[in-house]
Structure formats: structure tokens, C-alpha cells
Image (cartoon, rainbow, N blue to C red; front, side):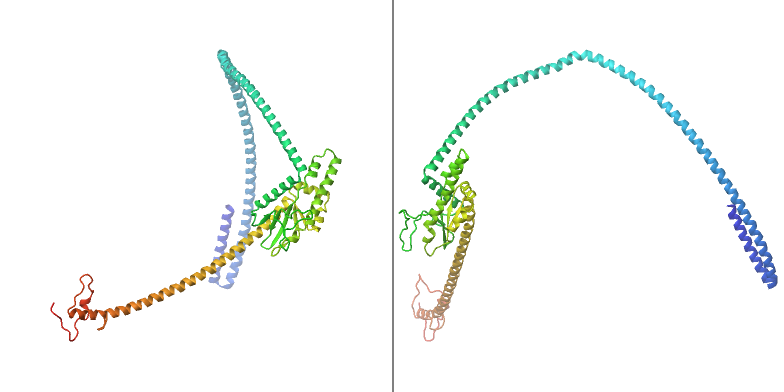
Length: 456
């Protein structure tokens, strides 16, 4: 602050000297002003040097003061540290003392509570043990009774289970006997096998929505081009199981062939030798059916306007039997196709029938469209006929109106009308009918020249 005052005073002195120099220069002339200015500059330089000395002295005093303050602060900080440490020691001593006294009081209180609890427990232990043991005894008794009841129920359940097991074993025995009987029937009767295959085929066709007599025919006798019933070499009628109509112009023949005898022998074989022999017999049975079906050449007897697709379907209702033969002889189906025989199990035929059903759906839709077109044409024809007749009725009404208007004119209008003539007759003395008077006759033309009224 002293330095600032000193600088301010120096500046003020410089301004005063400058002002005085200017004034003297203006008053005494140019030369006197220069001399005075030099003198004033020297005085100003002397004042500046004095000011700088004072500033340096002030700075040195300030540095000394700052050092004294720093030493005082250091001593005060050390004193605070010593006081803080002493206070912490005193607090720790007091805390230890308080904890000791509190621990002693808590220990005494705990001992007193423990002794009191022991006395109370000794007083009530007899009653408490009784209260605990008595419910436990009751629970044990209930558990014993429940266990006895469970034992009785388990005995009853065991007896029922033994009875049920006996019934199941008897049912299994009857099932085995039925299966054995069925196997014997299949083995002994080819007619039974054939009927079963035909039933499976018919059920499969019906499940796809095909209708007998519409979409397929059953056991229909084939005829040649002359209409004569065709017979086989043995003299039997040529009647395939099913003639399936693919659409309105094409047919395919499906014949069910069941090869179960050798297959059942294969399934029930006791050793590998029997199994191999049964497998060879099974494959040979399938191949025999293929040869027989190819030799019958069913497709050649489909007459116009129907046409054949060129092969027949040999339906094997047991998929396991068919795939066993194909796995044993993989080219079996290819050799059959070379003979125009397509071998199909239930799954394969099911997929084919799905496609055929879609074809019939499209045919039905096309037929419905044709019916719609026919009905539309008929409706348009009827509408034209109705308009024509309505116009004729209108023309007749107009003609009737014209005839009516002409008749009314003849009746009422003019001197030659019927009403005018009637009026003349009344003037001449005729009388109207009292029951059927002529309406409006009074307003008709009644006065005619040369005719007078007669006295009434």
C-alpha cells in the first residue's frame, strides 16, 4: 500500500513539474523554458531514484514480514498437533474406563437374569415337560393307528393288484391266442388274406372321400372290345379289386396282393436259418404276385372313351412285409415297373390318392362353373323373354287405353254420342230406369233443334 502511495505521489510531482515547465516556457520564452526543463528533469530523476529506493526498502520489509508469519504458522501448527494428540489420548483413556464400567454392569445384570431364569425354569419345568410330552404321546398314538390302517390298505391294494395282474396275464394269454389264431388263419387261407387286403384298400379309398360307383368301382368284370366278359387262362373271371377313375377320361386298376404267410414265418423264426429261408420265400411270393398281375394285362381291357395310364398298381397293405422284400432285393420295384406294375404300400398309395382327390376337386369345380354358366345363360334368356312379354303387356295396355278413350268419346262426346241420343229420347218422353240411371245425363246435350219437351 505504501508503494502505491509513493508511486502516486511521484506521478503527481511529475505532473506538477511538467505543468510548471510548460507555464514557465510560455512565460519566459523558449530558452528559459529549456533551462528550466533541464533543471526539472534532473529533479525528477532524483525523485525517481528516491522512489525506487523506497520501493526496494518496502519489498525487503514485506519479505521479512512474510517469513515471520510463516514461522508463526509453523509453530502454531506444531502446537495444534501436540494438543490434538493429547486430546486423543485423554479420549482413549476415558473410553476404556467407560467400557470397563459398562462391561461390569452388563455382566452383573446378565448374572442376575440367568439366576432368575434358572429359578423360573425350575419352577415351571414340570408343567412344561408335561405340556410337551402329552401332545407327543397323542401324535405317536395317531401315527401308530395310521400305520395300522395303511398296513390294512396296503394288504387290500396288494390283493387287488394280484387280481389285476392275473386278469392282465389272462388278457395277454387270450391276445396271444387270438394273434396265433389270426396268424394261422393268414397262413392257411389265401382267401382270408385277400379279403383283408381288399377291406384295407376300400377303407383307404373311402378315407380320402372317394365314393364307390362314382370315383371307383369294386370287383367289376372286364370286357373285351366286343363286350364279352374276359376270363383268365384258368377260366376265372377277370375282376380286379378296384378300377379307380383318375378323372373323367382315365382309369387305373388297383389290385390288392397280400404276402403274409412267409412274412409271418420270418417274424416268428427261431433261428437265423429259418429266418433266411422264410425271407427267400417271402421275396419269391412278392415276385410271383408281380408276374401274375403283369400276365393279366388289365390295362388293355379299359375301353374307350376311357384310357389307361399304362400300368397297374399292386397294393401291399402291410408296409413291413413290402419293405422287408425291397430291402432284401432293392431292384424288386424297378423290375416290377418294367412289367408295368407299380408296387405301393398304404403310405405310398395314400399320397397318390391325395393328388387324385385334388384332381377330382378341380373337376367338380369345373363342372360347377359349367353349371353356373348354364344357369346364367338360362337366366339371361328368361330375363329377355320377361322383358319381351312385359313390353307386349304394355303395348296391350296402351291399345286398351286408346280403345277405352274412343269408347268414352262415343258415349259422351259430340251430337252423335250415345248420351246425346239418350238425352234426345228423354226429351221425347222416354224415362230412365230407376234402378240403373245413366249418370251425368242431365249435363249431356239436351236441347236439340226441332225437338221440344213433352209434358211429364
